[in-house]
Image (tube, rainbow, N blue to C red; front, side, top):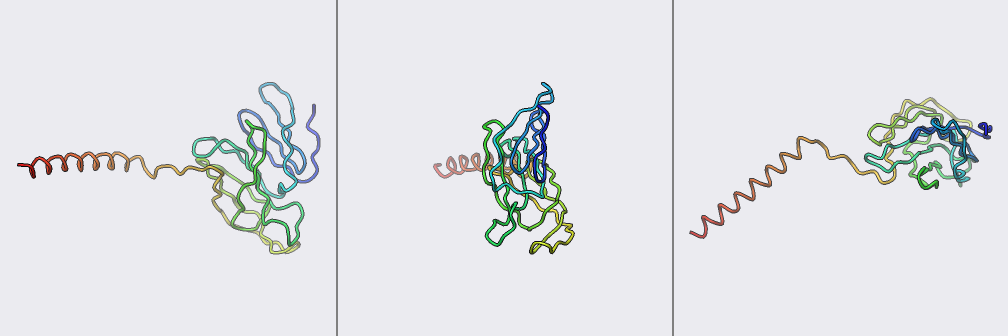
Length: 176
């Protein structure tokens, strides 16, 4: 199978040595090791366009591919965004949270399973666009924050041990 043209904007992400090409109506997967193409579950009709896609690594959030974009139909009733999360293991889609700022044609980068939505154009109505220098964090579904610092953990453990030892000494002293 050769990659078929997908109507609308295309997004792509790499996950587990496979390239996921996501369009408004189709998901195609290229397996780089087997040199083969296959189809995945079609994106929901509410999946957005004009955005980008990125994959989380499963360290602080479940392994998923996020397609972040504006609704395909811009109308007053349309959601602000139509962000979707694709689970490659289960081959299914779930709705994801909206972005804080309405914009399109941005880039997405992932660091420690946090997505950063960068640049693009803002709009307040169809036809009214302006360049954006925004860089916003996007928290994926199921994200578990990292412990603030590995330095703090030993300090907390030491403090706990000292408190326990102190309590035992006070108990012995008060019983005399």
